[in-house]
Amino acid sequence: MGERATAMYLQKSGYTILNTNLYSRFGEIDIIASKDGITHIIEVKTRTSARYGMASQALSRKKVINMMRTVAALREGLHICGRVQFDLAAVQIDGNTATIQLFQNIGLGDL
Image (tube, rainbow, N blue to C red; front, side, top):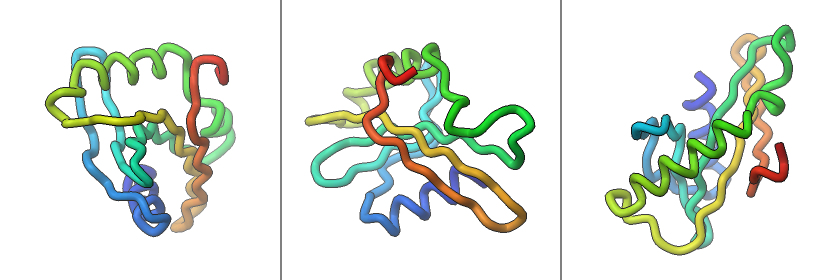
């Protein structure tokens, strides 16, 4: 539900969804989108309660490294060129409502 809500949010915000749920031996990429000449690699973290922490706190250093490795492994096949940016979509689900925070241009220094 979080990934679908994020994809709709991104489209309404002017992004073009290029791919979803891509796998490599290093892991998965939830959403690849583009906007303004930038390819956005987006990890979606979804929470329905704060019991296990906030969605915005759920991205680990290891996951970012694996996202980078996955993009490197798939880059040629995906025809990614130009600037690549890693983003986090933190989704909070409350009933039928999804609140989405988009953290742009995250990096290892942010974790």
